[in-house]
Length: 107
Image 1 (cartoon, rainbow, N blue to C red):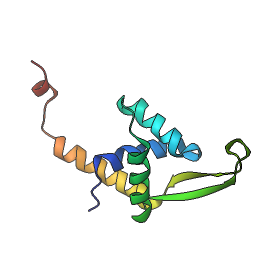
Image 2: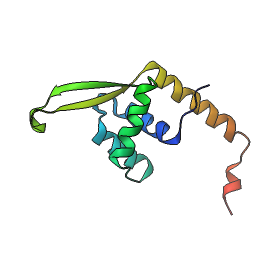
Image 3: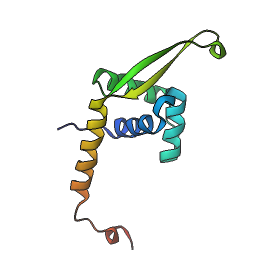
Image 4: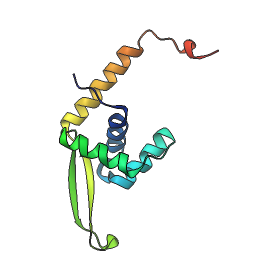
């Protein structure tokens, strides 16, 4: 069983939504769109580094970019293991929330 932290789940989903456009800045913007809060770049990159080590994402070097003064951009893409982790966490969410009625949250 693969369990993800909430940060890992949110960043993996943002990366998946962005496809080939997923890099630090765009991931941060997608997280904001999804949850309504900006996360620091430290949280974003620390989580991406951790997920790269776990083989959930792959880091891809763009090579020199003129708009960045010749510095590279690093893009991220989900690996098959990352997709499996998201599929599994969705099943876990469905299972743990099963039987809880929406009415339980209304007054």
